[in-house]
Image 1 (tube, one colour):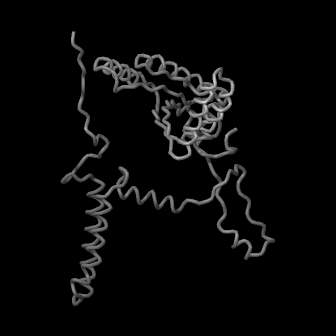
Image 2 (cartoon, one colour):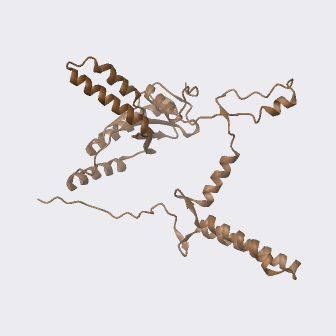
Image 3 (cartoon, helix red, strand yellow):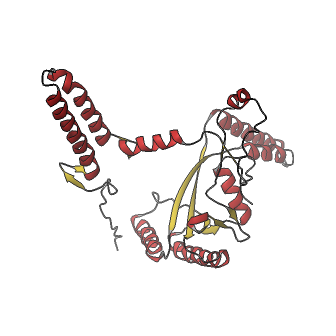
Length: 302
């Protein structure tokens, strides 16, 4: 019996907003039309106030402004429209450059210091407010006003080497998981740099205990190869995380029970797609957060 493979065509721009006029979205039309209307009003007012002003001098800055507006409306960077990119850049420019962990607040400079010293100190740092307020004994994260969340690690499946029937079974199993979701859930594929220092040290330590000199030489050669690879290449590793969240939980205990039950249900359903789901322990969740913020001493989590 021949295997059947079911496929569905999904457009690549599924997240693109709907076009309203000439393949332009409402946001693009609003930017271009609004700028055009403003330029027309400015042209009319200036032309009536100074009718003898040459049109070239009057139209040049207005055409430039309209061109810039069209570039902002039609341009994009990294999948983000140019207007949103510029707004994000403006918000980033207004944010403080130096933030420190200060839950009690940052005290002002002592007034007894000379004004020249206080000016030389530069702008005051701002308090750093991390998204997560803490991790409890069940590995549940307190994400402040957003409720509670729990993170689980997921194994991966080699999809390309499967037959069409096996691929269809894996897709069906993953579809059951999506249909079984009962709360906010995020699938996060995290890429981070890999450090082989610990592995190289373990190989060097274990080489002397091998029963044959050739095995010892092979182990040390492999350790040297990994050390050379880590020193001259940028090694990246991927980690698949499943984050379940309870946005309106009454208490952390109730949220932890519901999140644990949801992860257990997800693991049972994803087992049909050959994916294992293992929730993080409190120490594992703490280490994951500390690694995510790239801080050697993450004092913000208790």
